[in-house]
Amino acid sequence: MRRSSYLIQRLDPPRSGVDALRLDNPFTFGGGYKNGGLSDEAMDLLRDIFAFDYMGAAEFEFGEVPKALQQIARKGEEGQLAAWAFEILYSQVAKPSRDEANPPAPRSKATVYVLCPLEWIDEAEERITALAGKNPPRTKEWVGLAEVLRPDVGEYQRTTRGWLEIDNGYLFFTDREMWVKTARLFGVEVD
Image (tube, rainbow, N blue to C red):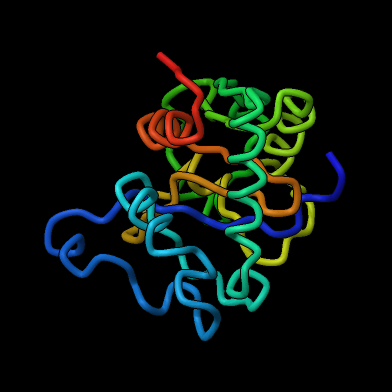
């Protein structure tokens, strides 16, 4: 990979029910470009797969998201994308800040689903594992992977189930269905 993973866009499950009727949140990309620079056609393709979470920073609002997705699309057209799953041991995942309220992990490991260029498989796993860890690398905005892998038992549960790493162009998910649909969109079949 070329750069550190500094810009990571959070992805939520697609909106459903009444929320789906409203289509996209007009404030998802703040005061930046409409749809963060994505065309209406691109949003139509993505809308049934995931929804973009508001990141609160201009770096996500002025065209970096479409650049990363275009980079992934080019790799897919070249047949250079890999889709796979790997497991992270719960012993490697940071515990929520309210640890006393955190029940024991129901499993000894969590599954993460990845779509990235073939040559970055090992590096992507290392970076994703680090993002879930006790001392994650510095990112522009909160990633929340550890909190999704090891949810708190409080009233507020995170909806994030996927992430777009913008600096190098790869995606990872904790939701298998979102991953399968995304992989297929970029020309990679998974079973």
